[in-house]
Length: 487
Image (cartoon, rainbow, N blue to C red):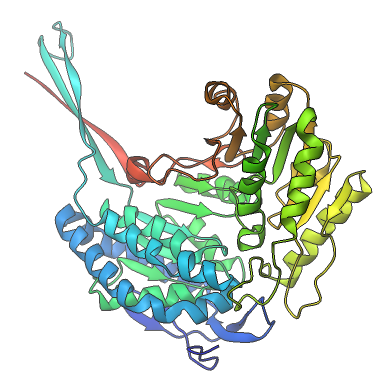
């Protein structure tokens, strides 16, 4: 664990200053169960101070041109490119990510690239076609023109998840800042230290005080304060549907704008003409990816009955190559889940599925390792009404449900409270496209699990509100203003 100073004193970042707290809490490496740092425990008052600082910084920041704001983002990207290679040990330790994922997705160019992509000028204003009006009591006749102008929402509270802390924060912070908003970041309690390193980079890149603030904590007090205070105009949240529903309810008191990417239970429809090998490899690529802690994973396989046994056997065979082990080893594919509590929750889902009649094909056992590990688990003979089929497990657990035709497959895919990311594997792309159009999901991939990173991303139903990425991500952090005139 080189590069990790367990005794380092970490502080909050508020209004351009480092602020000490009276209390801290332990950050535990899920791979070893050892303490790797002690994060500051923000009080409600400190969270409100951060929101007030962001509000005070807003007028000057939004008054800058996009080019000037882009300059700040570009400098931040340069600082991050220089520093992030040194962050791998710490961020891997607090997230529990395998070495490959830590290098390529936790502290990689993906974080830097998000700031670089947004470090430019975006013209998302648009003209409205003019129309003629007769004289009325409101004014004379004439030609009415209009422009749709985008203004920043204001102060954005970015409340982020534990699975990919840095990349997720970057995906919120970069579009919010370039559109003229100021921000308060509240990272997940399990792994906030990398975000405090990001705050150091923000500070050293020369951002004005108050434009970016970071508060950390293990309890609900700080994020609840950000949701309640009128100083915050928008909540950008990624996390569980249960917490998202509470934010939705409580933010209504101050009419906050919301962007929420919540839970998922990704369906993969495999039609009777699909390539089972390709579909199985695609499932496997995400099955143990970050130990299944990814909301877009196709963990609900809806397979045509004629290919059902072949698909189950293919997945069973592939599971033998998914090495579970020390996250720091180069050949480990499946590391630990984030906490002991979450490991126990995943195990309860597996046992619950068995109790409801599912067949345990592989996995289910607890690996003999010191951390919070769950073996890749495959459950067959599943029904749509089982809890393990309906609920987001957020672990390396795949369930397989049979279907007899496309209509039944679509009905099964839609038999879910979630609708974030689904998949269709078929030998006929046109058929797959028709099926996709009938799935209640914000995103559907055909014969692939690779998303388009500039296409709109978000969920139907209980999987969220709003869309981010690309142009849609820019628009999400703005208010729409119509400016009209008579000529």
